Image 1 (cartoon, helix red, strand yellow):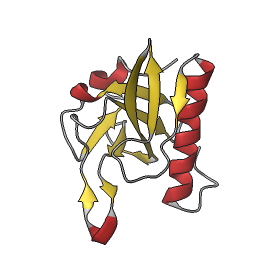
Image 2 (cartoon, rainbow, N blue to C red; image 1 turned 120 degrees about the vertical axis):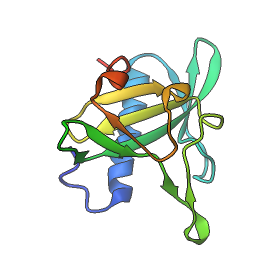
Image 3 (cartoon, helix red, strand yellow; image 1 turned 90 degrees about the vertical axis):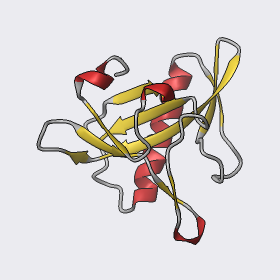
Amino acid sequence: MFDKCKTTTAQGNVGLGSAIAWFTANNYAVSIPLNDSQHYDLIVEFEGVLKTVQVKTTNYYTKAGSYKVELRAGSTKGRRKNFSTTKVDYLFVLTANGNRYLIPSEQVATDRSINVGKAKYLAWLLP
């Protein structure tokens, strides 16, 4: 999925495009913020309610048979932003094999990384 991506920025753009395509194909209205200083990447309208979505990608396949998703993001001055369940409503994940997950943020128990593909997150694997 990310074979042609030469940078992590390019990989992230593929993930963002995949998220926009999935939401649009499933009749959700999608808004894109003007900059990247907020904790979310998209605003999506769910049944008349606006929700924030952070998009992550991963190509790190673990020996245990799942994809590890780093939740922290780079920020200014070399400091990293941790994932926050209070600042984002959903986590959209695109894995290197093309699987997509839409995980409610309250189901994410950490601010550093998760392993998708394990039973805990299979309920949010998108069709």
